[in-house]
Amino acid sequence: LTEIGQQCDLAVVLGGDGTMLGVGRHLARYKVPVIGINQGRLGFITDVRLEDVEALLPPMLAGRYTQDKRQLMYGQVWRDGHVVFKAHAMNDVVVNRSGAPSMIELRVEVDGQHVANQRADGLIIASPTGSTAYALSAGGSLLHPTVAGWLMVPIAPHTLSNRPLVLPDSVEVSVEIVSGKEVNANFDMQNYASLLPGDRIVVKRSDHALHMLHPEGWSYYATLRQKLHWNEAGI
Image (cartoon, rainbow, N blue to C red; front, side):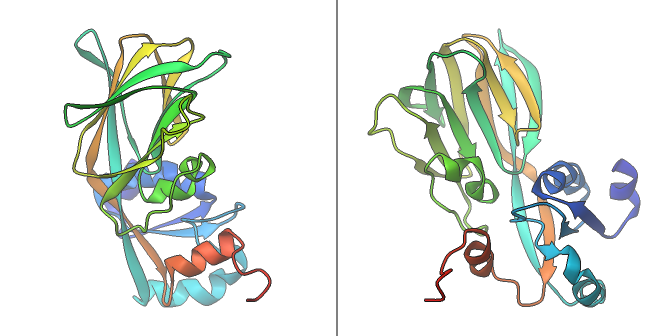
């Protein structure tokens, strides 16, 4: 991937959205645009179907495409005044319990301002790209990719009035582990760190963005209709 980033003008990613997340996080720093060929199931960000490659790829390689920029997130885990883990994410940074049956308690701050102490199974901080992933399953809203914002979505909160919150992506979100066993911080559910009480996860906007190329005529709304099975009755 490093050699592709340093030498290539374009990367064609064959796989599912998980493959695109892994490749995209790496290539974003090199500003190499990507085309996603969907060999998975949903394909929110790998939107060229495998059976359409012969028809759609040549025009895209000839310069006929729609470009879409996806800003990445950057997270650090702080322990005793030191960064013990750091990673980028395209979809989300998730703090959750793994095997323990009890809830965890999290102290959440935004730009140094206390938001709440939350008792829940966890917390999702999602980008617009990640709003169609874990955040959607947890009851979060959909964010259009051009929205410069994040979703902060609690997972099974103890207080039912604890609702998803939309934030500008210019803020810094801090999540401190107040209590809980077997707590993890997951980055796109592909990189993770085990956490201890007192650890703090700090999330901010990354300096990197992934440039995704879509076929001419691509529509985010058409993707939602198709992938989420809206209007299946033809209405």
